[in-house]
Length: 106
Image (cartoon, rainbow, N blue to C red; front, side, top):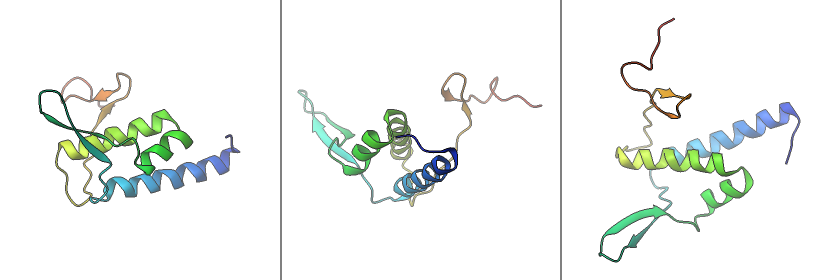
């Protein structure tokens, strides 16, 4: 669905704020647990969780992937109370910036 530029900006801001709230909510846990053949348990995204499912179908794959990547990082670093740590990114190479080499002073 296409919107005029001003409407698109407003819609994008609304979607951003909604998903920022989801990511800050420590009770939102869109994961399921599966057990592989070896008996090891693994957390995966629950494909039936309405939030990510709706995001993927309505906004698109890129937005869905960004939210899931953020949620996985929050879980990986065991962040509590919705406290989000911002990382410096190297957008040209689509990865976290290293301490040396990626940051340039102008």
